Length: 283
Image (cartoon, rainbow, N blue to C red; front, side, top):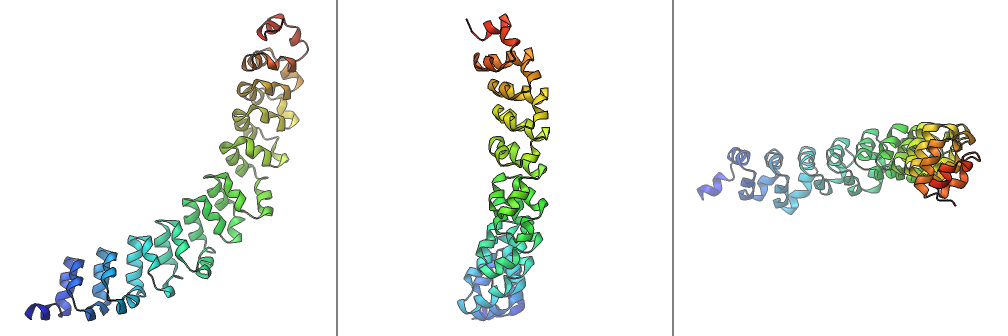
């Protein structure tokens, strides 16, 4: 009897809970309505709320301090939070800093409102480029945020409106990021106006020499670019300028890399060179 009375004493219960949150399991159901005591327990372990009486649990999950402390420990606690608190930015930030997919827990209208918040969008996209798909239109037009996604995967561009995709494929910085990931695919999608930019074409031809064919005419006479392409694929010599197709050093690289197949694309004067003819295995 005396012990039962002690567990009904608010001050003693608070002291016990401060020492160990599990002490809350010994109190009478009415003590669960004391939010400051419950908060003290939740700060130690949010899962203590699973032991709350069903009639009191809803009230507790609608308490701001209890909710944010629970979510701070685990984003999954967001699924328990009272609906009226789901519009609170601070609570959502605590959840998405752990896992942006916490946004999926929110009701559609609430989620839509949060996807219009720059801080939330940036945190989500920084974690996973796929989050860009859910962002409000203004952020899909924001180069900084788009780049944040593209640096993870250029495939993020597929989730943009067609008009915005077109704009991005004409942006040198965005295209370069895409080229570094997948040169062949990116060069074919990039705007033709960018095909005269050497630092975009160079990493592309290092992946696939044949991409040299997409370079502007002035770049076809750039020795560094052409050599990089020919080293990767000797057949790329066919796209080089007449001057570089007459370059003996490049010719040797092309012949060696193709077992002689590139010989026919060399300048006419080199096709008369006995050493090169022999190197190509032509009788």
